[in-house]
Amino acid sequence: MSDFHTFLERLLAQFPSDVLIISEHIDDPFVPAAMALELDRLERPPMLIFESLCDSKMPFVTNVFASRDRLSWAIGTTREKFHDAFNTYAHHLMPPVVTSNGPVADEVWTGEALDVRRLPAIQHFNEDAGRYFTAAIVVAHDPDTGVRNLSYHRLQIKGPTRLGASLHSRGHLWDYFLRAEAQGRDLECAVVLGAHPEIMLAAAGRMGIDQDEYERAGAMMGEPVELQKCQTVDIEVPARAEIVLEGRLLGNTYEDEGPFGEYTGYATGRSTRNVLELSAITRRRDSMYVDIVSGNSGDHLVLGRAAKEAYVWGGLKALFPHLSAINYPSSGTHYHCYISLRKTAEGQVNHLLSLLFGLDNYIKTAVVVDDDINVFDESQVLWALATRMQPDQDLLVIPNFMCNKLDPSSRDGVGSKLGIDATTPAGWNFERATVPESSVRLARKLLQDGK
Image 1 (cartoon, helix red, strand yellow):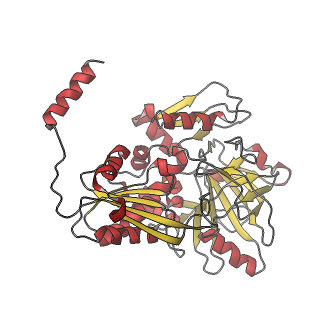
Image 2: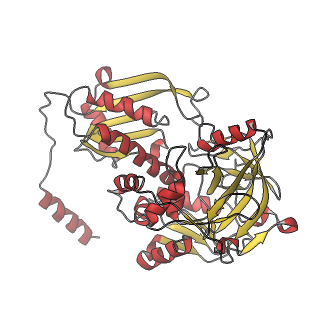
Image 3: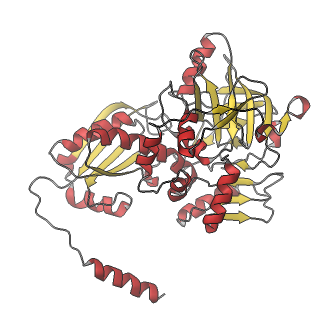
């Protein structure tokens, strides 16, 4: 069966240079984030494994999702086909199966042994309020229907059994929590720390509130996800996960949480201020601790935007079959989007932009270009802006639109949208200056040989 261990074994066998193992002891907890951010700057995205970090008794793994190519390979596709493949899996869901003998419960910590501070969570940035679980997939059941939900939430360590949580106030888990609280009860949940990347990717995707992310993960894995019951709560978790925290989100209990370095690149104390009280911790005997570098690192941004791009791509492609490509550039965190299109009618771009803003309220600025522009090359997008757009004709501004509350420039979750039409207008009669492709190939060879 597939798990994080088998994924790592396959990766090392096929792409050994895609994993950087740091075998020397590192006593500085900020080094993983510092290394990941430096690798982003160098445009090198290997996964990082620290064999001895601070006082950790288990390998510390991070930067797993910094590479779009690695993420695509993990689900059996290529970067160019990722969006269509990810959406196809949503139409071929595979229900999980329940077992009772998975390695996730090799060790069970309860009673005096229950102390979450024993796990090697780190503080990533100077401004963080403390040590955080950043790759925390929270699993919970809808209080009325029982449907499972998987979603990511930052969790601050506050004591041996107490975590501060921020639940994304427009997400499914927040809705679950409010309904449970209204019924006068806590919300049982489990936190998965480390699983096969296909499960981790499924947890980052968008599905209906009546759908189970384990089913999409099974479709991607090509086999049902094996689940097993937790020890102290009525929740199912991957039987081959690395570590699981069991507990309850406490109703009518709120405490300050944060600040925390978020995907915007800013530290923020904005939070739903929830409290998660733990009742047990289980782990594999050979467990690895899986982390996501927070802030605006590639690890954080790629995981979040890959699934979101696929969702938006599917929604747009249904109405605009001549859509060519979509890219959420790292420079815009989750707030910028570049789209290429073979335009077939005037007015089509504004129609597309209106739908885009409706599909993803995080987007603040969107640029639409012709299909001769590579949206993964930001210099080409800016060249199209410079030569094919006139501000008095090609801007669409929408005020008072719901946006993400973590946008530091928003007004408590309300902002505006800017759509830019950088496609060629009707009657365009200019041609790009080009050189023969054979000459390009020869030039590249000469430059390579001259190194």
